[in-house]
Structures are given as structure tokens and as C-alpha cells.
Image 1 (cartoon, rainbow, N blue to C red):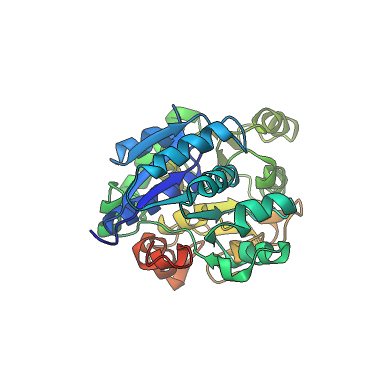
Image 2 (cartoon, one colour):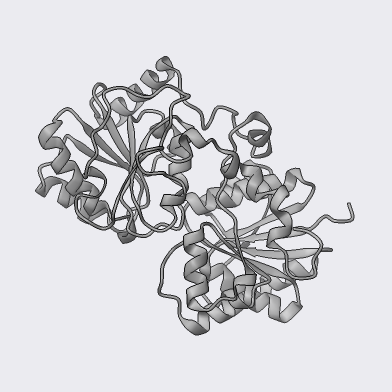
Length: 384
């Protein structure tokens, strides 16, 4: 087809977190629109395995360092062999490679910015973002930070993360149509029993959960402090944290020191995160830095109400006391401040954390796929 692009999605992360899942949703949506997609990732990574399971073409690079000339040269060669190539850098390190490969070949490239960190080195920012054909910011908060740092506003497009929420979009991603859907009571009970058997979690009572990498900006210390406070008045609650990261050993010690053993469980990496979400009564996100917080979308799709810190782009998803509860970061009482876990789950039609009563129109997979293709293009390109 004449307007078909060869999109190279570049991401060298070692895990499969929210950003990598968003890459796969985007590639699936673009494939449905007739574009050719190649995931360029680290050999042996979970992203490589998942991309192959979804039938996407995969290429690997060594990703030796941020400004890695070897990886950039190989990326340039891959792009040069394509008929209508465009490079899509999904991380800051990937943007460095796309910058070099684009400079050597003239291939257009775009950069995704998913974090709301303010520490952008001026030279690095100019090379990675100011020179990109377009920068996709996942929220208005991220776009504002890029503008404040000096990136020309005309290069920035706010493109929220998306989620497959119906049969058509799920088909694009080759996943079950009910993957992100509120479970039936029997399904929920069966999932809870799985977690009880695997981790020794109490089957009954209210479950409060968090799904996030164990890294400093996710601020699990605030969540632990909130758990201590909430358990004083509601001792029957159970807290579950799913994720891996460098903070794990320290957080395990904190759980013991704070007397949370048996009430708060660190589950490690959960292979199917949505299975945990469907077990929860409340989803909490205590991050002091969050570009958007796509886990809030997933929780909402599964019918789970949310409480979160009002960091970064989170208020663009959660309307305080309408579709969830917000508290200022990074106070130790974060999600516990003013939060009273409900005694029962809302029905599938009730407002949940995230889009809630407003629905998913803005956050469906197709909003960052084919219909918004032109928003990511280099000036002069007709489509992508």
C-alpha cells in the first residue's frame, strides 16, 4: 500500500513494564492500519518474547550504553533496507540511538517521553527531543516539562497511553477480549484462590494492591507508611505489591521492621498483572513521579477504584472524588490520607480509578494508533 510505513519501535529495557506494553499496543494498532512494524529490542528480553508471541517482526541490538555507536549503526542499516522507514524511540536511551541513526541516514524519527523527570541535560535534550521530527508526550504534564526545558512546542504532541478494551482492539493485540474487563464473582474468587495458594495471602477481606516497579520514584515507602496508618483502623485489610526492582531487598526489611508481615505482601513479578488487578478492591499508586500511570487505566478497565498521589499526569486520568481519590505527593500518608477502602466492590458500571464514569474514549488503543498517525510525523510526511 502506498502510504505504508516501516516502523522500527526501539526499546532496550530489560523488563516488560508499562512502557513496553504500550509499545506492543501501538505496534498492534499500526499493524491493523496496514503499516509494517519491527520491534528492536534487547536479545533475550521479555519484550522480544512477547513481540514474537504477537506475531511482530523482531530485531535485536546490543544496547551497550546510551550513546552506543554500534547499536546506532546497526539500527541505521536496518532502516536503510526498508522502503519507507521511520524510527520510533520509546525510551530516552532509544532516542539517543535514533538521533545518531537518523543523522547518518536521513531517516525520520520520533521520540516518546513517558516520564515526568525534570533532570533533562540541555545538550541531551536538544539532541534527543529537539531534533526529533515529533515528540509524543504521554500527558499534558510531560509536555509542559518539555516546553519548560526548551523543546519547541510545535514538536510536541500529547498522545495518551491507550488500552485495548473491546473485541476489535484486543484482536489487534492478539489477546483475549476480556483481558481488561471486570471479572464475574466466580472468576474473582478463583483468581484470589490462586494468589492465596501461591503467596499465602488471606482469601477473604479487602485487598489493596499496587502494580509498579520497585524503584525510588514509585515511592513504595509512602505506601508502606499508609498501610501502617490504615491498618490501625481497618486491621482486616491486606496489601499486595507486585513488581521487581532494586528497592526490593530494602522494602522487605521495611515490611518486617514496620510490623507489616502477614498484612503486606511483596509478590515480585506477576506474569499476568491483570489477574492481580481483578482480585483487588482498591488499586493504589503512590508515585512521586509518573508521566501518566497506565496501570490506573488497567485497574479502571478491570472495575477497580483507585487512590493515587497527584503526581505528573495522574490527575489527567483520575478526577479526585469523582473517578478516584488523589493526595499530594510525596507525603508519607499519600494514598492513605482521607482514604477509606470500601466494604464492597463497585459493579462493572460504577466509576473506577482512572477514566471511571467518563469512559475510555480518550484512552482506547486506537487513540494512539491509526487515527493519530499524523500526529507523530516529521514535518512533510503525509502519515504515521
